[in-house]
Every structure is written in structure tokens, then in C-alpha cells.
Amino acid sequence: MKTLNEIEGSKPKSTFRAKSKKRVLVVDDDAVIRDILYEGLSKMGFEVATAAGGAEAFQRFCQTSFDLVVTDCRMPGTDGWQLAALIKGVSAHTPIIMLTGQSKDQLMDNMQGGDVDFLMFKPVELTRLYEAILDSFEISNPR
Image (cartoon, rainbow, N blue to C red; front, side):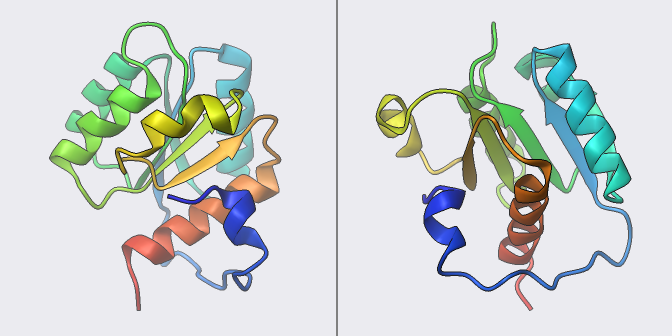
């Protein structure tokens, strides 16, 4: 798995446009970050739902169809890595973008699992997140 920063320079800008609103599940235990992501992604044309933790997110995911999940890495209880594994276990093709404040060295062991499609380091610019989301949709639904 590569980080967005590693692939950004080598990949042309995405031209993918959704035919219908894509559903995105945003998961973060920090209410401020959840609200910022909700507002930003909603304004970008996505249908956004939120969850405050991994267990709540997995329950929502199982009850409702989502096209993509954006999750924080560190959360109490079920963390982002565990959530990614649970989601991939029931929906292997659902893209997962993980946001983290940790350094890359701290994440190397967890990155080997392959359940996370994109890893982005905080602070994350909404435009870069938007590009990662579009890239995720193209990867999961190649033409």
C-alpha cells in the first residue's frame, strides 16, 4: 500500500465523476473533525454519514450500503485498523481511506495487512481527501 503522498506525483489528476451521489461513512472519535469532514464532503456532493467509533461504524456499515469509508486510525475500542479488517471481511471491494496523526514508521506493521487502500497524514486538506476519494472509486471500479 502506498500513501497518497507517494502516488500523487506519478498519477494524473482524476477525471472520474459520480453518476449518482456516492455514500461515504466518516469515522472519527473527535466530533470537530467529524463535523468538518461531514460538512466538507457534503459540499463536494457526497452523501455523508458519520460514526464516533469503530463499533458504531461497523454496525452502520452492516445496516446501510456505503461506497467508501474514511476512518481515523486511533480510536478507543475498535480502532481504524480493526474497522478496516471488519469491513473488508464483509465487503472486500469497499475502499477505505485512513487518516492518522502517527508517523509512517509507527504504522509499518499495520500497513502490511492490506485492508486500507489509502493512508493520509493529518492535517489533511479537504481537496487532497477529495482526490483520494475519487482515486479510490476509480481503483475499485476500473473502466
